[in-house]
Image (cartoon, rainbow, N blue to C red; front, side, top):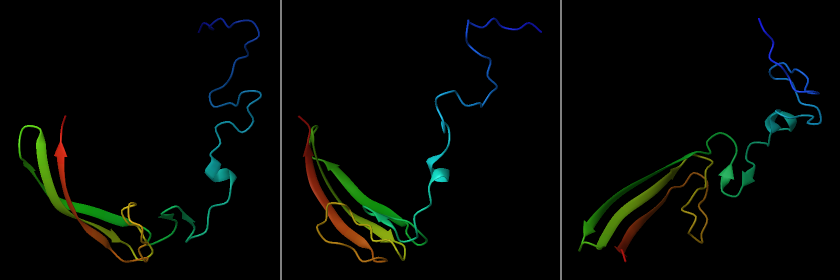
Length: 111
């Protein structure tokens, strides 16, 4: 088997080997630090069990003209027992485990 010619000063590397001057390259940050405790909150995200949510929407759109339409609908976020998620535009907070819901009504005109 013929060896490929290498440029001057370029050492052969085995696959997966670290490059000089890049200590720690390729290591995951998850393995380098401790994990956050359950219940830790970053913005609206919460770590731990029961912190998920499901959002769904039912809506109807009606074209008034070629460039104008109107729409109406109902949207709900169903939170798990430890999740306080809302729609991020509400000035109020949702208690963990409660559901956020609302009506959606609007009109759009395309210029």
